Structure formats: structure tokens, C-alpha cells
Image (cartoon, rainbow, N blue to C red; front, side, top):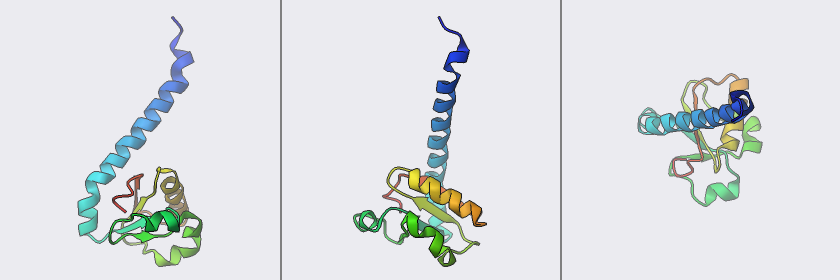
Length: 114
């Protein structure tokens, strides 16, 4: 039987994915309240993906356009980010953070919410 040291990278990876899953579930639970309070829902998928099934009321701003369209986003409102797999919403979250936004939530691959 091997020592625990050889498994720590795997344990860390499992913990990281577990945290991401848990954090997304927390945002999903907050969706009704966020909608009620006027949060802005942004689908960062491509235009083609966005037109194939975005939720009513969401805005499609493809990730490559997000930086140029920051002026359209209010810094004082909650922003919920969605995409197909969770990767683009992760990148959008980092971009918003670097641009001074602090009221954002990542719903990950919950395209039916955005």
C-alpha cells in the first residue's frame, strides 16, 4: 500500500472539483432571489449557441466580446454568468474581477438559467 503523499494531487483535484460543484449549486439556489432583485443574467456562449436556447431575459455577450462591452454592465447590480460547460463563465468571472466588478455569480453550465 502506497503512502498518502502519492495521492495528494488526486485528492486536491477532487476537492477542487467538489468545491466548484458546491459553489455552483449555491448560486443556483440563489437564482430566484437574484431574479427578483433585478440581477443581470449574461450568457457568455457564442451568438449561435445563445440563440439556440437562452432563458428569457438573459443577455448574450459572447466571451470574446465581453471586455469591449464592459460599459453595458452596471457595477452596482448582481451579474450571473452562464455558459455551456462552465469554462467560459470562469474566464468571464476573472475578467469582471479584474475590471472592478464585485457583485457577480457563476452559474456555470446552467444554460437553461441564462
